[in-house]
Length: 118
Image: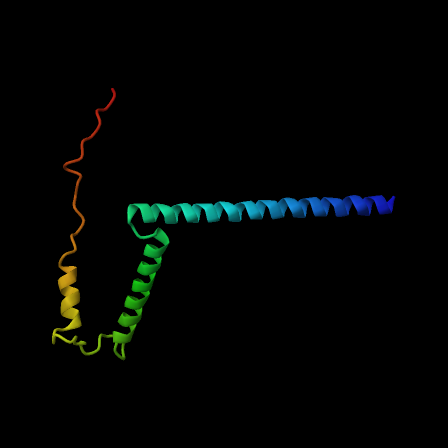
């Protein structure tokens, strides 16, 4: 009787391991098909692949954080300004780029309120 219980337990383990393997293989196949379709879509539309866009933004942010941490002076303050090849300050270029930023616009006055039911 012990032999039959061990045999049935081993069979269940094998069946469940095969089911898990099929499930994982199916997930991998779905992921690969989705990746291939999204790459084809990006080729057809002429846009960059979303993964490439996210990775590029991550690298740009990482580089900006690294550069900002290198500009910090000894007590956490900014050190002397850095100059580029044109002779202008890097801070001036950053300020010029920040001048294009628009603050939050209040849309509450233009928003239409729905009629109230009495």
